[in-house]
Length: 212
Image 1 (cartoon, helix red, strand yellow):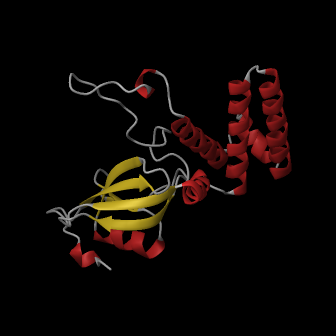
Image 2 (cartoon, rainbow, N blue to C red):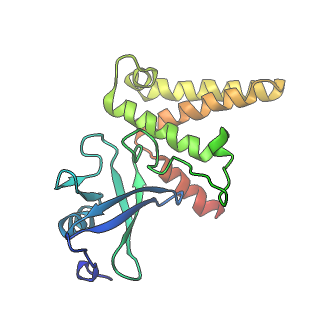
Image 3 (cartoon, rainbow, N blue to C red):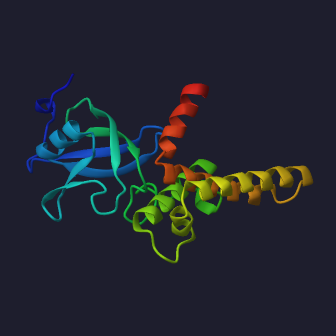
C-alpha cells in the first residue's frame, strides 16, 4: 500500500486531485489537496480538499450537503497527481451540475457531440436530476414539489412510484406517451431513492456487478 510520503507535493505543498464517479466513470471535478487534506481523506473516507483562494482546508459538501464518499485513492505514475474514486451524494459542481465538466468545446479537429446540441444521454440526465433532487432534500424549500413530496414521507413517495408505474404500463399498451410517462416514473423513483438514502451510485454498482 502506498503511503502519503510517496505523494510529490508541489512548491506550494499542493497536489492536483481528480474526483471520479466510481460507478459511472464520469470525471466530476479537479481540485487541490495539501498533505493534511490527503490524510483526512484517507482517515475519514470523505473527500477533503485545500482551497487555494481561501487558503484553508475544506470537506466536500460541508455547506451544500453534496458530500463524496471515497471508494479508492490512486497515485499516478509520477507521484504528483491523485485520483479519488468516489460515491457522490448530489452534484459535484457548485452550479448544480453533476460534474464540473459540462461545457463542450469544439474546433476543426474536434466534433460536437449529440449531447451538446440537445440530445442528452439517459445516464447523464439521471445523474443531473438525482443531484437536483438531493439539493432540494438538503435545502427543503417551501415552494419545491420535490421537497413537499419528501415531507409527506416514504409511504407517499412509494405510492407515487406505484402510480407512475401503472401509467407506464397503460402508455405502453396504448402506444401513447410512453417516453413522457417513463420520465415521470424515473423522477419519482429517484425521489424515493433519495428519501431512503440510497444513492444512484449504489444502484449503478449493482447493475455493473450483474451485467458487467
